[in-house]
Length: 322
Image (cartoon, rainbow, N blue to C red; front, side, top):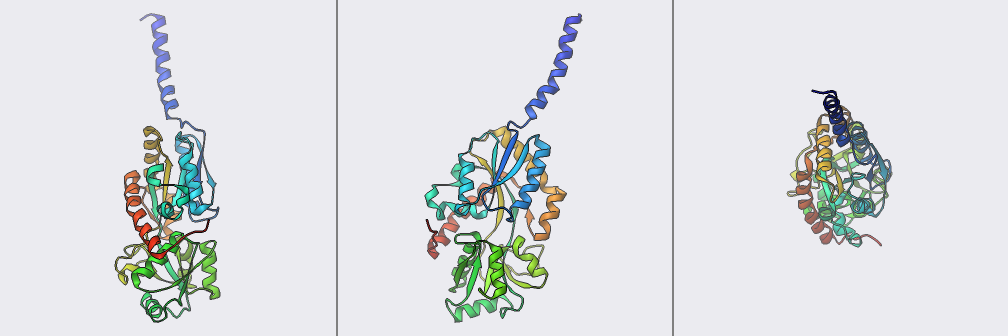
């Protein structure tokens, strides 16, 4: 082998790993993960952990940007309209399954307009009363509601929120009539429990479980179809109200049309976080159940929940202003 060929071979050998590293580099250096709710909400914790992990493994800076408005629709639509180049992602709650019906002015359909990545975790919600409430269990609350139609009040994080619909579905299936009192957030609704403004509240475990564990409040039931492993002592509402289920979850999406290679890399990295110690340590105390089970499971969940929530909204006559 002459000197020229040897140099060419050596150059080729050096170029191969450089080319591989170039191909592994994420195409956008600054990646927004949009949370379509105000900062400080329950989505922020897992989203920031995931952003940190992706920054370390994909060689770009992933950062959180809160874009509240229109019940989550503003931020979701921003992602749907973003270029599918890997520079914008969406981290949202199960409210995305409500948007197509409740926010019709958006003309937004997550199945049509977004690329699913994964359900991050199930975040159970519970029905909470004050510790000294006259309601010691779910049966006593239902009995009083039947005896006094339209007298009991419940709070949520706002008209059309997932917890509002959890309450509307509960009333419909339990055969009772209650009054919904909307607040700007679940934390305000929880405060209203303590001041006696409302009788009960629906909120995610991230928002209400600490109150229960500290003995300041009592959880009468959980909105998941079955008992939650972290709090097995609390019954599922479905045990007393057959057919009831109001799953609450967090999920990630990308703009429609994200190249397959980028989608696969994101899904691979997200799936690997099932055993991430930091994520587990932050979610398990809140009774959240880590899933990270990929695009197919998310599509299946959305396909089932959009028509179910449409039925609840239409039956209850729920509408938002504007």
